[in-house]
Every structure is written in structure tokens, then in C-alpha cells.
Image (tube, rainbow, N blue to C red; front, side, top):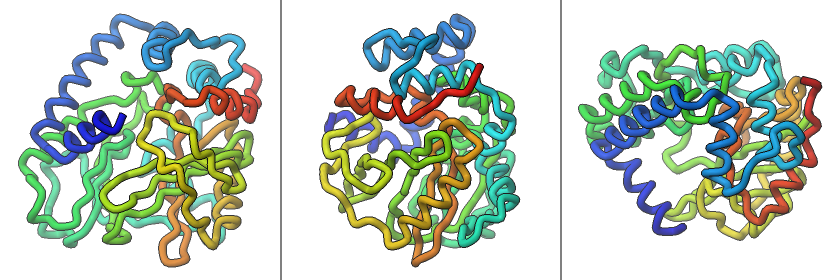
Length: 307
């Protein structure tokens, strides 16, 4: 696990390798899109990733219920909230007190439009229609922009729908947004796992030195030290609870109220709470949760709507 994770991190930092990884993935999943309909793909890929067949018609586990929601539940606000550009407009309309929105410095339809001279020294570029398609720039002179533009244009040519059949991404407009880098140090990413409007769990992404960890807690900040979802290594140690945890939790639950499940990502920067994003199918619902008891426990927390 350590070795594979280190390889993945090295690929992310190598623009040349990243370009070919994205291109290969696009071609491969384009083939799967023609071969399988949504239900067939979900059942096949679930077995491939998790090692067992999912019960889609009578789901019990967290991962099974996410697949059910993916195939059966349609809320018109989900595609809006999944788009990193449109989600900010949605959040503004909610008028939630003490919740800040990170501004856009620029919006592009192509990486070729990128004008580095008009951007500050530090910034982050995000593809609005995907997950993990980000460029963190702490020094403009240290990035191979020629190859990075190729990578970003590859992102813009992709549709996240084909990788996990998340319907909410299928009709989105691919764009790049540029945001200010809110801190020169990596931020702690507080991800509130909300089931039927209540925060029942937490995913906390944080760095220790040059190592990245993803840890899981219950909704009251009690660590699950042995839980892993195959996203990254878990540290096995609880980090300090943010001072404004209760307020952050309340904000997350307000945003989550209309949905049977959503993960609400927030940042706490110098005492201010910032909106990150909303994710309706973490890992596209294909988390390989260990131990399995957590997949069952998280599943118990979600009450599915009528089809």
C-alpha cells in the first residue's frame, strides 16, 4: 500500500507521465462506456474494486447505497452542486451566515487561454467538472506549463461520468477556474459525511511533513483508527478538533439537508470557514472500506428515498 501510494504521488508530480495516464484512462473507459450500460458497469466495477457483487436492489452497505442512489435518485440540484463553478452560485443563494466562498481569479474554457502574467505567484487551478483535477502552484517558475497545459486540456476533453457512471457529471460544461492559494502550507480538508441532513462521519485529509493522510471520524470527532477506504494512508492518530467544529458541522448539515447523502467539504482558515465543494458519490461509491464493519455502519446511517 505504501509503495503504490508513493508511485501515484510521483505520477501526479510528473506532467509528462500524467498526460499519458489521463489519455490511457480516457480511451479505456470510453471502451467500457460502449460495452456496459450503467447498471452493468456498476455491478462489474464494484466486483472488480471491492471483490464481491453488490446488492443494488436491496442495499445495506454504504457503498451499495451510493450505487443505488447513483442509478435511481435524481435531484436537479445535484449536478449544480457538483460543478465547482456553479456550486459557488448555489452556495451564495443559501445565505448561510459565517460561510465564506473562495473567489475566482479567472475562468477558462481552454488551458491555452491561461495568462500567467495576470495571475499571482501562488494560485490553484481546478477543473470544474471533475475530482482531483487540480494544479497547485506555489511558484510559477517551477511548473512545466507546456506539458501541464496538455494535461489540463486532456481534463477538459474528459467526462467524469464514464469513470463511475455518476449521472450528475454527464451534461456539465468543462471549465478551469483559478483560485487564490489561501495558505502556502497544505490546508486541512474537513469533509463532513452527511446522511439525511445529519453529519454522521468525517473524512479529514491532512499532511504531516511530506506525507498525506486521510483519516475517518464519527460525527463527534472520535477517530476510527483502523478505518481505511483505499483513498490514502491513514495516520492512526487523531488531530486536534478545530475550534469552530460545531459551527462547521452546523453549516455542513444546512447544506446537506435536501439530500439523502452528500459530503460537504469545508476549510478553516484563520478562524474563517470556507466552502470547498460538495461530493455526492465519494470515490464514485467504490471505496474498498476496511474493516467491512464500517461499510455496514455507514450504510445504516443512510435512509434511502422512495425510487
